[in-house]
Amino acid sequence: MVQQRNKISKTDASAADPSCLRERRMFRLLLQGNPNYFGNALSSSLSARKVVRCNTWYEEIRCLGYNPRNKLLAAVICLHRPEGYATGTRISSEPEYVRFYLSFDDGGSWEDQGCASVAVHNAPTVKNRHHAVSLPLAREEEQFPAPWARVRAILSWNDAPPANAPEWKPVFGNVAEARVCLCSSRLRGTVAGEIGEEGGERLCGIGLAAQDDALLAVVHVGKGKRVSSRHHVTFWLDADDSGAFSTYLGVVDMPLSALGEIPAGGADYVLRLPVDLEAYRQDCGENSRVLCVRGILSESEAGSRSKFQCVSPEQGFAEACLTVAPRVRAAPGEIAIIGGFAAKTAEPGQILLGGGSPGFLIQGVPLPRHSYVVEVSADGRNWQPLLEEVKVTDASGAVHCHKPDPETGHFAYLPFEENRTGALACWDGAGVGKWQVRLRNYFGGILLPGSDVVTVRLPEEGGAGEESGHRLQAGGGGVALKPVNLFAPEGSYGEYHLLSA
Image 1: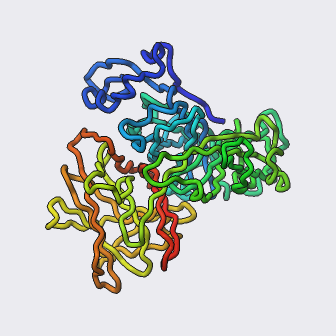
Image 2: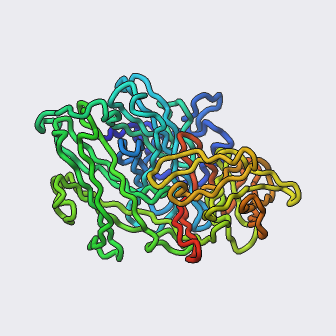
Image 3: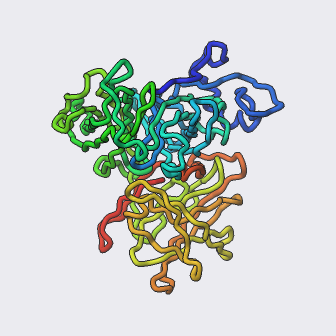
């Protein structure tokens, strides 16, 4: 079960004003002037001006766990307020970072697994909103030194947690821990006893992973649970905001034998259900839509389709408000998203990319049987091809590296099943001022006419704007992007549903 750690202390300056509204609005500016302004810098000769640590007024991790099928670490984040997550226009956003650690000696030491993030927005709602952040592990089961581990997740708004710093405290966010089972194949056939004092199960929380449109549910199971049993989680959608939850989204199950031996104190695992939310998206430029989803935990397959049957009314039931990103349209062979923003703007050059660690992802709809090259130019005459390998996510959630042809320097367009996010290239974003990003398409090595060109602006270091984007956050294949959805209009190439990574 998740252990909440390091919430707001009564000795912190934030206790008198839990909202810290001024500090929230000026957060990046205050850190630029004094990296130790809030007293959480790892090493700094500067004095803290106002000590704020683990302020959960705006957001916090509610639960976290591990999915042994997809090898995913995941955390469910709860946003408590309608505002305080971005500045500027209504579609601007800021990142919520989550860095994951594993400990194989019960907290004696921690191994950094990487950082993932999700872009969050202000929203006109009084309900808490839930996001899921997941990070794939590259290690195989045989590489884990133990069949189970403690996992620690550090949530930090608008400030990426430093690497290899498991004791670091965020300003806005929190630290949470759970126990997870990692190596099921070594222990299959192990049978635990009947449910005892540590037994039982609970649906801890649910959230939407915007990077691949998947619902994630975190379930806690006690050590005494028999490994022969199976859990089902059924998802129902309140599509018309009536509270009826009449739209069936699907059911996902997990045999507890897949978890192997459950450690003392139980374990938290993640169930993942891909969903198609295209029918509920609004057009690009409109606010993201907030939808309510209900999750029900059941031990029987017959009960999995029921709206009410569950392990127990108190422990097998959870509801969440999910943020469904707006829609972006793009044709095959065009740039659709750059740095998390829709490439087709009303006025060229109005996409302002900035802030964060280096790198902007360029995404588009695939042009079957063709190849491509993405280039950038500061003057429109001298073009630099982007030939670094790009990480792509397939339909199962696995992350792979896509490289150009060593002879031609061209990338092959991958089909939707192999590149669900439509990732084309990654640009380090070095430089300031206006830049042009060009996508050139090839068929059989022959350049096709009509290259797609998008103009963007790169601010000086520390610059900001009403439409600033978020750069990639490296670490374990995770990236941070404003979550927008794109698809190709119906035509000779059919329809593609590609999601921001």
